[in-house]
Each structure stands twice: as C-alpha cells, then as structure tokens.
Amino acid sequence: MDLYEYQARKLLDEQSIATPKAIFAQNSHEVADAAERIGYPCVIKAQVKIGHRGQAGGVKLAASRDEAILAAEQILPMSIHGHKTSGVLVAEAKNILHEYYVSISLDRTSRDFDVLATANGGTEVESIARERPEAVKRLHISALDDFDLEAATAMAQSIGFYHADVDQAAQVLLKMWRCFKENDATLVEINPLAKIGDPDDESSKSLCALDAKISLDDNAAFRHDGWQRFDDPHQFDPFEERAREHGLHYVHLSGEVGVIGNGAGLVMSSLDAVSGAGEAQRTGVKPANFLDIGGGASAEVMSESLRIVLSDPQVESILINIYGGITSCEQVANGILRALDALGSSKPIIVRFDGNAAAEGLHILRDAGNPGVHVCDTMEQAAQRAAELAATAKEARR
Ligand code: GDP
Ligand code: MN
Image (cartoon, rainbow, N blue to C red; front, side, top):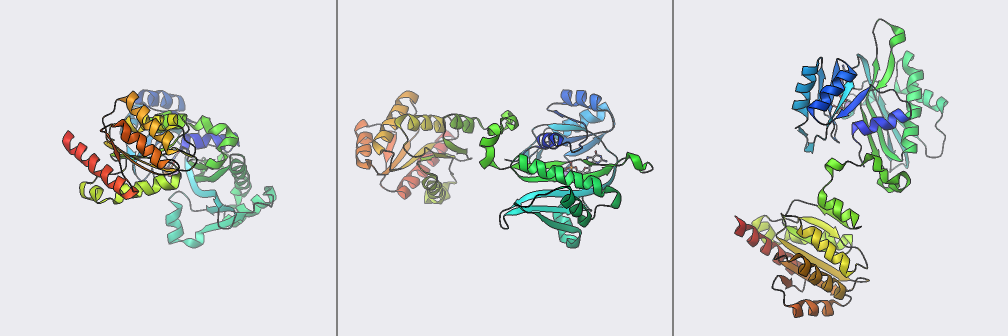
C-alpha cells in the first residue's frame, strides 16, 4: 500500500525526523484556515499517490491568503498522471539551501535493503541516475547486520553529504531505517531531504524532509491493525468496499461484462476469455470486474456476489464460471436462482459449470426455466455469449 505524503509524514514525525509544519485540507475554506495557521509563504501540495507533482503543477508557493485559495482552486480539481487529487497539504515554506535524495527500499533480488542516495537531490533521481550515474550511490543494509550510528555515519560520508551535514544525515538515515523496519515498509523515500535555513547563519541550518514517499508491505497489515489509520474513505470504490465486507476478492474494472468465478486463476482466465472473445473485439465490450468467490463457497456467497456485480450500473451481462471442487455446482446454482428471485434482475446470466456436481447444477438451472439464465458447455462459448449479450443490451440502451 502506498501512502499519501500527509500520511508518510506522520511516520517520519513518529521517528522525530524533522518535517515542515503542515495541515491536510480538502476544500478552499480549509486551505485558507490552514494557510492562516501555518503562515506565509506556504506551499500548497496536491495529495496524490504519485511523484513528479511539482513538474505537473501540483506544488505551488503562496505568499498570501488569496494566493493560497487560488492555488487550492487550481490544484484540488487536478488529476496528476491519472490520479485524482484527494486533498492538499498546506506546508510551511522553507528556504532551501541544498537538496539531497535518500531512499531505503526492499531489494528482493539481493534479499537485503537498498539505500539509494545522492547529494544532488531535488529533481527526480531517475534523471540524475541517467545523466550522472556516478553521483547516485547505492549502498546496502544487510538483513542480519545491525545498522547503528557508526554504520550510518560511514554511509552518510560515502554518500557525499557535505561535511557539516554528516552527523545530522547519519541520524536521519538511522531514523529512516527504524521507520522502514518498524512499519514493515518496502520503501521510505525522502526527496528532497533539504538543507534549510539562513545562508548567513550557520547555526540556523538543518536537514528537513520536505517530501516523503512511503510504501507498506500489504502482507504485514495484520501486524498493524490492517493499517486502518491510513484508510482513505474518499477513494474507496463502493463496490470493492461492499465485497470486502463480505470477504470476497473483487476488483472493479471499467467494462460491461461482470465476471464471477472460483479461484483467482480461473477468474483471470475468464477475464482473458471475455477480452479475447470475437464478439468483444468486434463490439468493444470489456470485463466489468474480477470477482473470486473462493473455495467452498455457499449459496449465500454466490447470491451476495451477484448482488454486488448487478449493482454496478455499467454491467450488461454476467459470466459465471465455476469449477466445482470443494464448491458444489449444485449449491452455486441454488445461489444464482435465489439471488435472481430476490433481485428481480433481467440482465442475462451466462453460466458454465464443470467439476463437482456440474450436471446437477445445470439441471437445476434448466428446470427453473428462467429466460435470463443461459447455460454454456465451455468457457470460450460462455465468454463469447456474455460479450454478445452485453453488446446487444448496450446497443439497445442507446
Ligand atoms: P514532487 O514533485 O512530487 O516530488 O513534490 P515535492 O514535494 O518534492 O516538491 C517539488 C519541489 O518543490 C521540491 O523539489 C522543491 O524544489 C519545491 N518545494 C517543495 N517544498 C518547498 C519549500 O518548502 N520551499 C521551497 N522553496 N521549495 C519547495
Ligand atoms: Mn519530491
């Protein structure tokens, strides 16, 4: 899971890494209040889970309340590289003397931790690495060795932190490492790690994290209360939210053919079958979702799944592809009929069963005689039919 900058900053604060004072705001009123509290000049920064915001116009300086409001009105409606802005961070503007870049990330190949750093930060590290590869240092923290102040100091020196900054940089590295470890992160990046202060007053100068990017390891969520504190109610997809409440694996896509199956592999194949079907290619219809009902799914689970997929107004037809293992196709058939009774939906359902009690399941569906339920023998036929029926229904709506 990637964090927003305003969330990542909290984790840095917890390790007492210096960050500018800042307030998260979601409308121009809140921005004006926040700016008054922070003072001027302040920076208004788009909160999106993607970098290069500065270049995209998502980071603006404001010298007054009016400028802050204007910046908010420009930034809040923005999408940056396809990511909708979820709010802005109003941060104290610092006088930057120098910009460093430092990141710690998980290196799956070498099975240790990469520290990537350059004394020429600020711009994107990718472009520095391209243009001046010698300026970017790549060091390692081993999973077994202790990373202590001595090791951090040696690292700060070899990165090329200016003499006066080495001790502070070592502290920052050590704190970043703690932040990485304690939060089960896969990435902790500070860019810029800025040297700030008054150029004429040596004692005013210090290192400050002006931007932070943190990714957390989803596999460790159980150790952190599911990271509920980073839940983002504004960005939740209502369908995905509902599926999650029922323990279903659902991903909302943008097409017209709902897809339900058991087992991630089978559902993926079903998505491919729909995308690749001649009718889909001809008419441009696409899968509307991924929904895996899992193993041993009951009639209730089937019926809840259909309810979720049918509540998506884009859906024109639904492909149900079940390989009965622990799940009995008989149960699935009953679930389908029960859901259709309760929902009274007229959207076509295309069913392909195989495995445990497939014949019995198909028998139940045929006996019910619901004209909206179509039975197919193979996944390819079912996908083709689902695409065709979705395209017809879509055309009829025009
Ligand atoms: P990014 O473009 O998404 O990486 O966003 P950043 O937060 O890193 O901001 C981009 C650039 O804006 C930084 O590299 C700085 O040059 C500038 N910037 C950000 N905060 C401040 C600040 O407090 N003072 C000044 N003068 N510039 C800032
Ligand atoms: Mn940055």
